[in-house]
Length: 224
Image 1 (tube, rainbow, N blue to C red):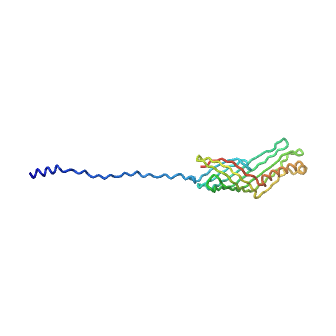
Image 2: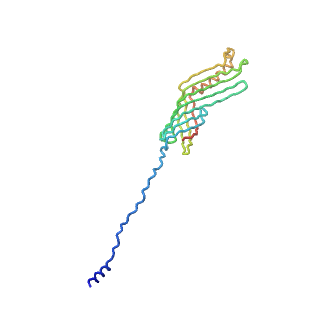
Image 3: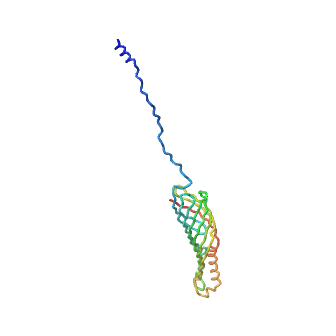
């Protein structure tokens, strides 16, 4: 009887389910990609450019653009050659060449900038005509140093292309004048027509080499 009771009690026992602990799943940690900083470029840039303007006609150069977008520097060269008059017995020619180092500062790290250039310039003017059967070319050369304060706007695009415009004034600081008569014949040197033509040459050279000239330029370039 006792054995029967023990057997019945054993079958009547309930088996308790094993307790399971739920492990909360956590999302995988993801790294945040920092937002692009448009206040500066990813790196400093080197570039080349060319343009049109006054008073140097054609100009171009190489430049360094700092990563901060706050400043840049450039080496600039310019020049032009012009023949305002070319007749059978009266030929004029004017040429100009320049070399300058310039710096730009963007006070708001935007397209607007203030800038200055310090450089040298050479102007040559000559006029060929015939006097007493001789072809004579009086020539004037003026070399000067100049400073050009200016303001402008510069846009650099993601493709590498850039574009800019600027306005200012070219101010001469010093000058050196060299006049060549082109002849030693006193008859020609004292000829009123020769004297008048020579003065025309001097006036043209002085205007380009000794006076304050307006500066204006439009440029396009590529930076990498």
